[in-house]
Length: 394
Image (cartoon, rainbow, N blue to C red; front, side, top):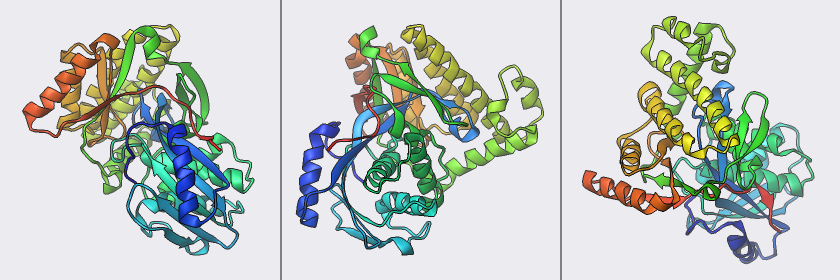
């Protein structure tokens, strides 16, 4: 689904989505819901290894106006694609059968029904301001806003973490992308003014205060404009390398390997790709814990070097960066940013930059000039304000 104009905020587009629903389906919706995209401050590929992550929700959201149906039909429409209404029979839904962007809401309905929940159908009209292909979880926002709406309308009684698991299953089993649960948990559970410290093994969460503006800082997101497709196999290859490392080391998941054990573990791994994957995951888990400690101590500036260290690990050990992302980090830090790193699955997408609030114009200018000098398309740069998770608007 294409991104709408601007960050907007859910409240700003909710009324328009409701009116769009009425024009499309001939009656007002039963409700309007919103779910945000996310940016991950630190902790990449750790979620598929039962590890720790530290995302925050963006003000960019997917908004859905929805009403129930009782005839087993699912009708979905996006204000952003220019396509007509996609009509699906719930009983005929099959994993990996296509349907484009509509596979995400369809996958949620399928996952709920597979789990035994009485979803009898729905009409949905959606609009999103979450940039697609930017590593900011536009797909998770679609999944969670759909899951929350169906949960409320059909009285399913599922908790936010349970809805996140539904969204993950939709993306894993129905769409066919082997993502972890971080994106869906961030969209479902984040709180305004906080980062979400998530243990992806048991889904325990802790809201860690994160207010850069109060400390005279700014967190910027730089969307490189390079589109990645995690379904193309590269993400799956990295995940397979992690799983191979865990098997070779005799552990259930790499989160069980600590930094003290890491040197010995690496000596036992002859394969370069597996060794790099293990080194990255173990050290990035540790970087999450270091960052949480710094945030809780109020030392936000010290987080910057941890971000840059994390980028080097993603670039050199996991090998999921790209020239555009590397250029963001190099140009931003050279211009005085406290730290920067790629965020998301990699192979394009976005980077995060932590900078003094007074330096944001200088840093932004330096990044844009570096892109122009390299012959790259100008990146989109915007501030990331830690925002609220999924909620009902009306």
